[in-house]
Length: 361
Image (cartoon, rainbow, N blue to C red; front, side, top):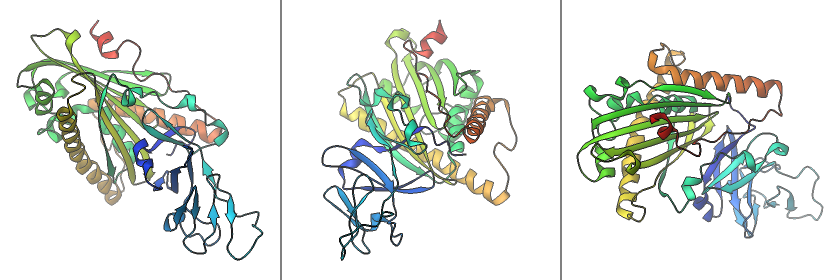
């Protein structure tokens, strides 16, 4: 189920420092680049002449030259040169897609281009804000993106999958703390947990700077179809909640195909902003955590294909948030199928007053 009338992350903004990027998104091979004037462009990675991918050619100035017969195409997808002749066939053009840079990411719209309003880009401004420090990375996951949505909405797996990174032992398992699940605007799911007076897992020892007992809260937030955010707050039990270290973990998923997902992630924090060692430590720890997820998710995908059975095969109480998200996705897919111009304006992922703080009140 690929929702098309929405913005997806096509790449980090810094990736566009290279001549071009070839990437498959929503099962469509694309070539993307930033022109010398700073304009972003995306087009089908296929020459209309003999279908050789344009990525097998080279960039010449602000144009792509096919590596087979040298035909050139502008950032608008129009053919500008056909070696050996002066006239250019009217069909010699390549389909393009809206591409916009915002919040340190470059976003693509794969649906009706007339509906591509930049005001519909989800607000993840923390990633590029001077008030937050970012540790970022990328994983390619050989699994359907809905399995990643499930994983990010049900964090009870931390004890078992992430025992070396962010999980607690079984006595303090996150599954033992009831999640409050809510749905907003028929497109957003929140699952919030409070975990008072627990032993700090290894990752949170890094955050605090020492082993200790902590109060921790965590909100898993999902915006249909594939934007996820984990808001996590933590502080030693002897400190007041207002002094909590808060992190927003961005999990921005873009389907590659039915069996692959581009996972762009960033851990942004509001504390010790100038500590480069901490930034790198969090990057390494986050990457290790997502390596653990990758292993599980790819096995899931293989099992689904081998057994020809869907997930969840058996539902349990902890599946409430993932199941609600899947139902919203099915609803959105049905709406877009019946109305190709159907668009949903994304609500705020984190309200002006933090969801976690409101929960405590």
